[in-house]
Length: 334
Ligand SMILES: [Fe+2]
Ligand SMILES: [Fe+2]
Image 1 (cartoon, rainbow, N blue to C red):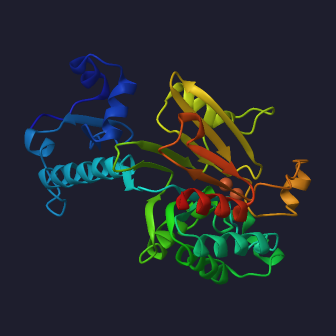
Image 2: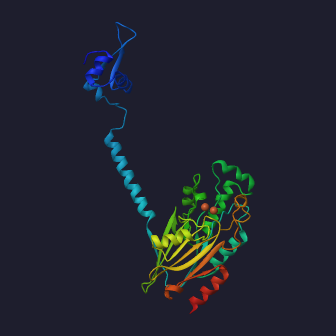
Image 3: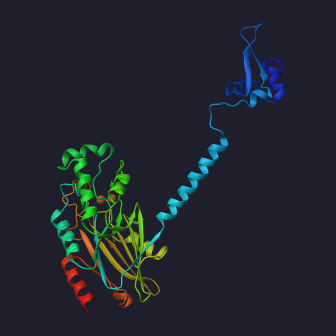
């Protein structure tokens, strides 16, 4: 055991100032005591080797902690790979996807007439499937929780309606929007999707590659929103993705409660259609307060896809879901 010495002697021994000695003592790197002879001064001594290696026997051994972290990081990497997975769907005949914009089913402004029309047309049409770009419910959070007082549906009714929509039609994809993720929404919707007919259920982004027996493919890339904004063009984020990180032949999103469409040869020989769907929420008080214009059309947009057609004609866009259904039936009868 080392001897007790003054702050000055310890400072000299360690090659530091006396303030440094006091700091080290406070950090537990040196022992400190009141000098028994002169009570107003302190003495210091270095910790012995045994003191340095003293361990709390109740603490989990570091080896076990490392093993747990290794397993956690492997699981996180596995989950990340699942998120980026491409879902492959075989379709040998022309088919249609009704890209349903933000439903916000519990909002008093949700256009249920338009929603029911889409649901009934999908269920009545062979080869027609639904897509949901997210924000199925308002799922108010934080300061916004008071907004439940301004709508008829309660929180539990909201999730009941959301679950109904998940199970009412067959889906090629369901994406969770920012509203869906709030609170415990993500895990609730994941549970609700059990038993629903959905090919790709994604927290943020879905990648689907359709293929047919002849070897043709068509790629669909969906997010709640694509990064990028332009006041002149509602599809700016998707067009940017199609040029900078090309993958999809059709890029779809919602979120901003406005609609837009754009079609071009984003890469040589590769046509890319970009679509933003408006969603069903009307008479939006938030939009009125912020002076956002409210679009009249585009609650949902329907794409009819014929992988055997000319590259520029493989994807046809319709506003009217019933007209799209008629066109699809004609295509499939040929
Ligand atoms: Fe959103
Ligand atoms: Fe939304």
